[in-house]
Each structure stands twice: as structure tokens, then as C-alpha cells.
Length: 583
Ligand code: AMP
Image 1 (cartoon, rainbow, N blue to C red):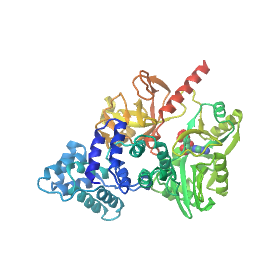
Image 2 (cartoon, helix red, strand yellow):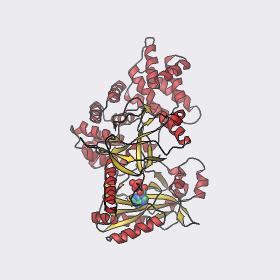
Image 3 (cartoon, rainbow, N blue to C red):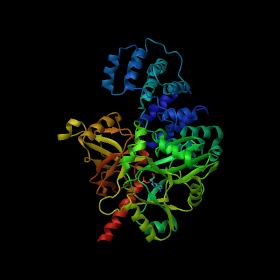
Image 4 (cartoon, rainbow, N blue to C red):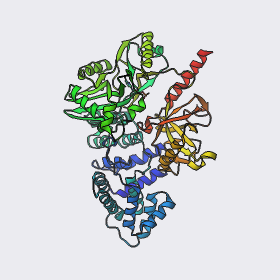
């Protein structure tokens, strides 16, 4: 496929405001692809050269891209910078400058998708001395052979600013539409995706082996599985009502780890499926020592334990370990314990379809006694009183609460189901639990805050069904001066000039932004609201947070992991019931 076909589709996608339309453009694009191209088309459209868990990034700074544009156009760098100041988008700058140059140069031959992908991949893989020059060369070569429209996307891509706003669900729908003409294959495609976290691989399998290949899809060591998520209920009674006899585990407030092991090779993935292996040498050593299988995939929650006080350190301290520096010192100062709570695969057997009670048994056999990995503490009961006691005891010991688990449920990769139900501190009065919101825009500062060019955030929850982000709160408090500066800088880099197709909001911020950041937000309660779009049905009000306050950035979560509309409605119902009970 010629790259111009992709560039044209991108132009259409950029102008699109609706998700269905987006899906249609993509499925049309897929129809033009050959089996060996689909994977690359999917990655490129997501702005990556490999599935995100591979961590392969083109990684080239603005200054170097400016240099590449200068080299390709023959204009001095100053002119490039000047134009960039005006357009605010190096893609547009390159497009403008190259089209004025085009009269002079005849571009040689059309670029193929393959060539563009290969160059980006080469750029991503060069490192060390002279790597920036190599990257510039790779980019100049593409720019020299591209038409103005292609240039726009070729320039944005390595900067990570393609900004097409295509979510995973849209690609899955588009693959289904390509094959079946409708969304009927979505569920099966999604299952394959949940097992491998690689949309390119799902696309390639569908193109080469059809839906049969997708049905036969198998879990693979070192391909992270998308994590199962927990629903919530407000009381022990309701949990027992829902599950009957169930397993109740402590809810550790740490860092979720998905461990993959094959012989001596170990990888640890975060809940966002990023590789974190290098950051936790003591956990890796523990895994090598204590896991009694050649091959295994299991999950646990890691946290630092304070032996002197006999209690766990708070989450923030565990999170400090997610840094690249002083890993060794930190590992010695605050060694982590890993509480294993599920097994997904062991020595050739895929356990995701086995019921919980079987998985737990396998997990108990998998982990040998030792100082690093422990089994999550668990009890089985059908008595709400016992559950309540276990819950109170967990809170007293500094844990977040409990997670109750359906004894007969399979592992629901990538899904939030009632197979796992969390119970956290009471929902009385103030919202006890913070909610995680996606930042969709921000406001300029007024008065005292004018100098920070930042006055607050516009935030959204995630509507899983529609794959849309819907506004729920305007947040104006919880910011220190330092935080405001930091936010302005971070958000300034991802400003977009229009509302994204996957965002629904009637409130217009001063700037819209790309979906990238999640913030934990505390609030007094959830109220009905005519101005916010979260949970809004025709003619009815939506939901909003009362007195929202920013607590912290949640860099361990991706936009799709924001609290969902469904969860907000559940919390709203619980809150209402508690209010009724109190009067
Ligand atoms: P939440 O992040 O509030 O939706 O709660 C779900 C998270 O609790 C999971 O993603 C895990 O990181 C964490 N967790 C802690 N202990 C457990 C456990 N025993 N079983 C499952 N998840 C747990």
C-alpha cells in the first residue's frame, strides 16, 4: 500500500468528530491492506511501531525534527522555528515549507507504508553515540520523498503527536467491520486482544488465519495479558447476596505486577502493561527462587513492608520505586513483598478459563515459601459477618479493604466483572474513595493564577460501552503553585485545537488536550448535573462531582482506566441509599 492512502485516511480521521465514522474510515482502509501490511497500518495509526508493552519508541526531540525539516526543505533552521511558532504544529510547518519547496524538486518515487514503517523502526532501534544523526537521516529521507499531506503525518509521528485519537475498541470494531460488515466479531477479537495486548498481532492473525485463527488464539509468555478488574458493592451483605460462598482476599494497596517467567528469564509488567522489570531487582530474584514452574504467568500486588512497625508503607512510598535511578539503593532500603493473587498460565496450561478455586490451588503449588513472594491472604465464607470482620481487620492493618472473588468464575482478562468485587472504606458522607478521571482540557488562570497560565482542569469519566470520555468535573482546587506549573507544562505539550472525537462535553475549556493523563480526584459527593455529560441520557441530567479536589497524577493508569460512568452511577446509588438509611 502506498503511504499516501494512509495519509488520506488520517486526514479524514482528523476531521471526524464521531466514533462510528472513525470506525468506517478505518475498516475501509483495512480493506485496502494486504495481510503483511495490516500489522504496520494498525501500529502506525496508533502512533507506535510496536505494541506499547515492547517500549520501542522513535524518541526524537523537537529540535532534531526541526533540523530534519531544515535539511529536507533547504530553508535555514531559523525559518523553520519561525514557522513553528506560528503554526504550533511541526507537521503543518513541514507541510507548508515543503510545499513551497516542491516546485524545485521532483520527488522520486511514491512512499510505501512498508518504507515509512521500516524507517521509523530503524530510528527507534538506533541508540548510543550518533543515534540522533541517524534518526535525522531516516526522517529526512522520508520527507524528501513525501508529498505535502504525507509530510504532515511523517513529521508528527516520531514526536508522538499523530493525534488521531483512535482507541483500541475502535480498531477492534473496525477489524470486525472489515471482516463481517458489522460489529459481530468484536467480542472474539477482543478476547484475543485481551490475551496478547497486541492489536497488530490480532489484525495479522485475522488477515492470515481468519476468525478461526482468532478463536484458537493462545496465551503466550512475555505477551502481557490485559488485567481483570474489580466491580464494587457497598456492603458485605450485598457481596454475599451476589456471590454466595466466596473467597475473600486482602486488598493490598500497592503496585499491581503481572509476572512472566520462562526459565531464568523474568519480565514484570505494570497494570498498564509497561515493562518494569529493571526497577525491581529484588522481586526478580525472588521470582527466580520461589516460582516452581519452568513457564508461568501470575499476578500479584507489590508493596514495601516496614518490619520495625510491622505494617505496610503507604502506596506513595511503593510508587517511588518506579524511578529509573538509585534502584539498587531503594531496593535495599524498602524491599518489596509481592502478594500473589492469581495464576494465568503455568507450564503449557492456560488457566484463564479455569475457575478461581482451581487457579488458587495451582497458585498455592506454584509459589514456594520464601521471603519475597507470599500468597495473598484469603479466607472462604458465605457469612456476611465473617466477611465484615475480615474487612475491618484489613482496614486496621492499613490495607485498602478486601476483594471478594467468585469461586467459579474464570479470569476475565481486560474486563470489569462481578467475578471480583472490591469493598473499600465506607461510602458515607464524603466519597471515601477517590475517583480516577481523564484530563480532557484545561482553563487559563484568572486573578492570582493568571501568571501560571493555568486555572483548573476539565475532567471526564470513561463510558466503556460507547468508548467515549464524558465530562464530570471542573477542578479548581488541590493545586500547589508547583503543581500548576507542572500541569501547565505537561498539558501545554498535548494541546489540540478541537475537541477529540471520543470526548463528549458541553463545557468548553480554554484548551482541549489529547487523552493521556489520569488524576485521582477526591470529592464530597456525586450529584446530578445538567451541565456535565457523564451518564446523561436523552432529556435527563448527567452526573457531577461536588467540590472536586485534585489529589495526584496517576501515571500508572491509562485513559481507558479512568473510573467508568457505570461505576459513578453505582457510587451515586450507594450514596443515596446511605443517606436514606441515615434519616
Ligand atoms: P481498584 O484499583 O480500586 O479498581 O482495585 C483493583 C486493584 O486492587 C487491582 O488492580 C489490584 O492492583 C489491587 N489488589 C490488591 N489486592 C488484590 C487482591 N487480593 N486481588 C485482586 N486485586 C488486588
